[in-house]
Amino acid sequence: PPPGSLTGAAALIRRGFCTFYEKAISAQNAGAAVVVLYNNAPGPLNPSVITPTDPPGRPAVTIPVVGISDVNGALIDSRLQVGGPDSVTLTWTSEILEFPNIPNGGLISSFSSYGLSPDLTIKPDIGAPGGAIRSTYPLDHPGGEDGYATLSGTSMSSPHTTGAVALLLQALPATPAQSIRDVLQNSADPRPWSLNPATGLLDHVHRQGAGMLDIPGAIQATTLIAPGKLSLGEVESESVTKTFTIANNSSGDATYSLSHVAAVATRGTHPGTPPPPNPLQFLDARSSVSFSANPVTVAAGTTASVDVTITPPASAPDQTIFNGYLVLTPSDGGQVYRVPYAGFKGDYQAIPILTATTFGFPWLAKLGPTGAFVNQPAGATYSLVGNDIPFVLAHLDHQSYRVRMTVQHEATGELLGRALYIDFVPRNSGPNSFSAYAWDGTIETGVGSFLVPNDQYRLVLSVLKPLGDNENPAHYETWTSPVITIARPGESPTP
Image (cartoon, rainbow, N blue to C red; front, side):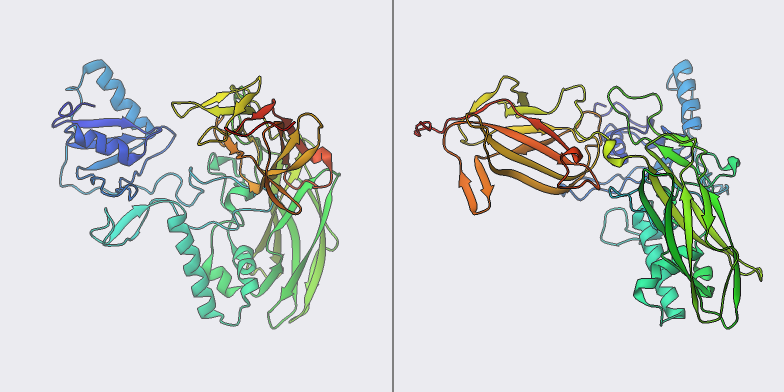
């Protein structure tokens, strides 16, 4: 808004693409007396307008900034639309009111990311308080002048977990480092599905891990189950069998009954091209679980191994992440222990990586005079001077274990060497986002690096699917570029 256009007013702003700081500082620069930010998703909003440090020297937000829910924001906006800017008044009083905690208190925060990891390992491992946490903050950081700030995210949940480990080791200093995660996971408390707690279903293992930290439970535990999580990977067969070990660290024999509780399954990741109406699907699809022994009695100070066979839910389509918790209940009514599991139903390598998007990627491209990439579908000539080099633009719709570009001689078809070799490449999260891979005319071979002479070439882009076999061509997706003519100034073409 223009300077002075909001003088003395309260600016009602909907959450969107710009950061909270950018929204608030724009309103402040326009003269607003206060900013009211409202959510664009169900639930309340707790915005942070701490001054960014990059670039340095940005002004601080000094006017009050408050956050309200999407419902309240839409209500105020509708009244403004009908009655104009003077129809709603914001009144500040000295009265202090108490309200219940935010609706998802004790549940997974709406901004929490989904796993699994690209190699289908269970991530996250565990949950901890991390939503709207008021805690200590550096005094020399903008917004932390009083030593406190209210923040959300792993900046809060990670210190909670670190503190839990410190308390555990203080109480049980002999705990081996390699067992700490298992101890915390065994005693964690899985939380209800945050999007609809009334269903009684548990939230996804690939969003809450083993569940919420239970520090007293971890310290008082007399049983250790290892591993503390079962990552099943891709399950193309009817079932998968894993083994876990129960260690009874108490002074008496212990008998455990074994059971299973399913969590909400998911399918999909993000909008494709064109976007589906419901890109992330939630399924009440429950696995079948059986144990090699049940119940299990473990003598004091000994261990016992149990095989568990997990069959993916028949009702779930391929590419579903199915998940749940194995539950070990002592016969004496003591502490209950759990082991999370998760797997991918179907062929993981069937997920496409190189997708066209609305731009028709991959491209052979040039960098235009405005700094924008220009597609070269018929091929192009490059001098290799400055920015006049070939670029391959590609959209990776899924993570790739390996991305490589190989240089192919146009006349002979011979593969001369590598132009690019990158492992563990993340996906392009936006529906039309892309990665740009440049080639400066250098190739890598088994004996060194070389500059190719002036001639005609193609670039062969190959992406290896996650968990793919490097020696299996079916696990690669490939694309070959149009002809690239290298024409360095002052150098004759290869005869």
